[in-house]
Image (cartoon, rainbow, N blue to C red; front, side, top):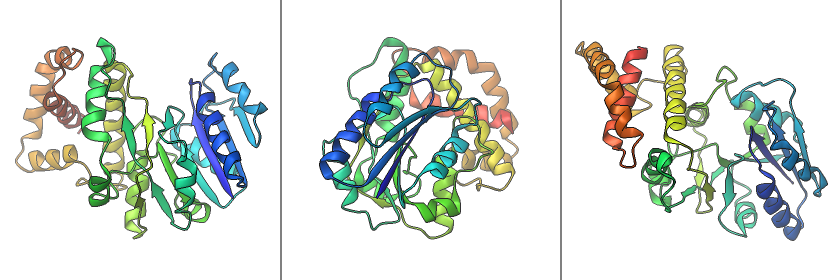
Length: 292
């Protein structure tokens, strides 16, 4: 018995739900698909209304925005079955037997099947997100197994209901960034393994560079707060580890100062069709140093 849980915000996820519904019906499993829009007030919700015409599927809209973590916990509270499949609205199973492959491992506590990114070059204003995703986020199965917890993504994962309810997402995280890192860290702290399999979803990695940069800044702000409140160690990310080393030698203020002087120049590169990930790494380090 499977509860498929999809949080959405200003996105038409009806194609995703139709595909999941088709696969589940073919498998003749007991299932439900619950989709909730987090008060986006989007015109796209008229397209999502078709979800309510599908078997065992429901779409609804919250009146008040509750945030990225709380919406996932709320979805879990509405679920009727003992296993959960969380999916982001902007993904799509790569294979027609996505659910079948997942259910074959249904006795595992947590399963992550991986992300696959488009190799087709995007529009000129979206190269940074595309380059970062293909280089850093869409990891091979071997690399995921070797770095089990920190290649995990909440974009697509299976988890037992009882386990999820014992951890949940931290609802202090309202906006984009690091809610899945904290979730995976909490799994690691409890010695709960993440089973990695080859069963990816395509991830929509074509958002504009400026949107991605702004989301990155929100994620770094979240990271700063989580470390400050001892919810994550400063060794969790390369950027926070480097900042700790810089701070030890009183160089963090120097990096922050250089970042302030060069931010506009860095942005010029990052918003171009040939963004440098090395410069993006420095941008992230500089912004994180400025926060601290």
